[in-house]
Length: 344
View 1 (cartoon, rainbow, N blue to C red):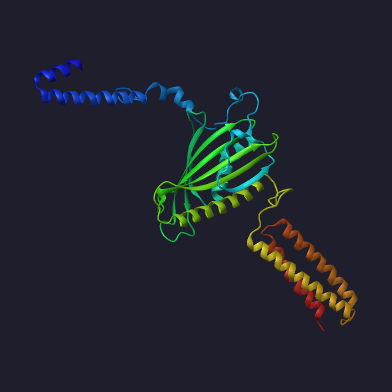
View 2: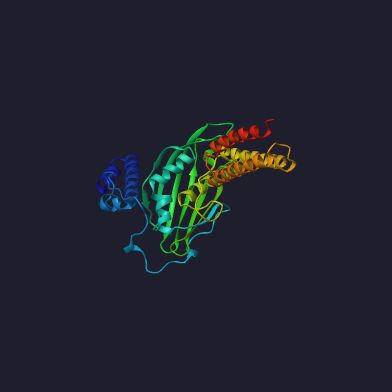
């Protein structure tokens, strides 16, 4: 390079200046490549290829037993929740098992995606970061039910950044971006998962969220409100799904009860009201003695009514869509019984 510079300067000041400029640019490029671990031929350096790079991409960032430090770290190592808490539960599962379930179990993750009606799920591998944490990308297509303008569905890009504190808990910060929606490049959703170990067999899981604006948005209030409503609705369903999977009663305590649809609830309530009304009618006939052999017939009808009432109560306790079938069968039997009682 020095010879090239001398030749250029000897030719003419203009040529020399041009040669000097080229040399300066080459030196800057070489320095930049060295900082990025790239050689002069444009190939990645040894610190980014081979075994070291292979070790940086992993399936599960949870530290192995040999890498865990002795003693547990204080839960103060975990950050504070964000402004809005959308889930706060104490779960009958250890911190590591909870991690493997919600962050590393592909079957559970797939069930969550189906619950939210997402599609084309792509979960990237974890990439170890210089600060000892790990990151990964998750992509999927989601639909927007209440969106008046813009696309009805769009790709969501989640960036998961995790920090592990074995013996204490773990933390995952999730950034959710939807660049294809209106003003999608001006904001993102931020969720923070905090799992705090209680006694090795129980873990407190707290999920909080906020909307972060990174640019000018003319409808900031509308975007924030819609985003917060969407996250609250999504994690309300997630809470029920998680508790059902862990066989925890979503009402607080006891075994999990299967989720009941709106149709099942309405059918069960209707059956209860019909049965109560029938019992009152039958009791009236029995007391007033307006039927021939009224007491025997009413007693039998009351017994049948109690049986149907117990079946309705069982259906409600089970909270299944089968309550509709129970309601239909009960209603048919009730009509038959009532017709037999009131017939002249």
